[in-house]
Image 1 (cartoon, rainbow, N blue to C red):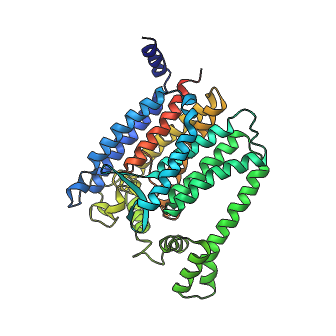
Image 2: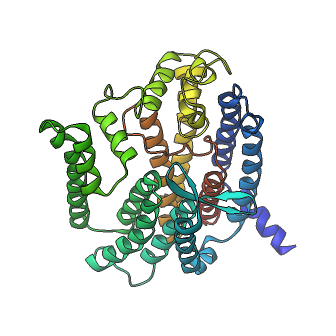
Image 3: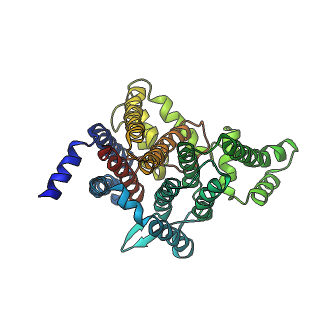
Amino acid sequence: MNVLGLHFGLLKRSNWLLVLAMLALVVIGVLFIRSACAARQEEVIRGLFRLQILWAAVGLGVFVLISLFDYRRLSDGVWLYYVSALVLLVMVLVVGNEVYGGRRWLNFFGMNLQPSELGKLSLLLAVAWFLSRPGVDPGRGRTVGVVLALTAVPLVLILKEPDLGTAIICVPIVFAMLYTGGASLKHFGMMGLVGGLVLTLLFGTILVPRWMGMDVAGQKAVFTRVTRLKEYQWKRLVVFVDPASDRKGAGYNSWQSAIAVGSGGLTGKGYMRGTQSSLGYLPRTVASTDFIFAVIAEEVGFAGGAVVLGLYAVIIACGMLAAARARDKLGRLICTGVTAMAFAHVFVNIAMTIGAMPVTGIPLPLVSYGGSFMLCTMASLGLLQSVYCRRI
């Protein structure tokens, strides 16, 4: 009876605005995944929205369980989660399913698991636990060094898959948590300088060979040798720098996505009446995943897209509120990390959809199709709710 009373009390203290925004986005995702896949001939693809409903139902269960579970007790096993995630990240490089030249999925009993999603969440918990320990001073260079080391190990493994999108998301998560934890501006300045040098090197290996008049093969060779990245990543960055350079090749998805968004106008063409996805101009392999926002914008226009962005704004505001009202440093850091993760996913995905950033394969939380991503997103929001419920 006491346990039931405790759980009832937690439910009363829940942030129901967060729950409503989360459920609304899940429903929107299911509807537009159905629309994006409706014109496909394969029955399996046409039924992806049913699988998304299943993943959402399981994810909702995960959300409720983690919300009821005390986040402080959850942190007791942080190293087990962290090491387990590293093991899975190593496994996927050895025995993972190879798709389009990358190894990102492990097959368990007929289901595909994406270890990079678990790695992202376990990294968040590990950094929050470490920075909240008594006696740890985030203003010291040694502390920042430990956090960067914790980040570097999963980051390198994720990049080896390669999964550049997930690796990119890890960076703002850790930076936001360091800022909230109390890292000094000097350390942020040093990290910013390193980041600036990396970006200069990255884009320099694209622009300088072009200015020198090298042929395409030479440009590609310079980029891959210096950066150690893949050829398709070079193509995506070249298209970002010069959008008109390869609209029928590497830039095709981005170009068709921008057309879909622009053609939606104010109110869109109507649900399931979008021509870009239904006629296959927006490739059906990505319409339900990375470019789902383009489908939404085409069919329900600027107004519908604004509603989606408004729902994300509610979730981010709820995350900031939970961080501000957290009863301890651990809770504040967890909420900061989850909020930064949600913001980064939304910002990068939509910027990618409209051509404002290079295509990196980052899905839209709760809306894009994907089982591992749905479960990890729901789990992270469950952590947010767990902290908020125990604010007093």
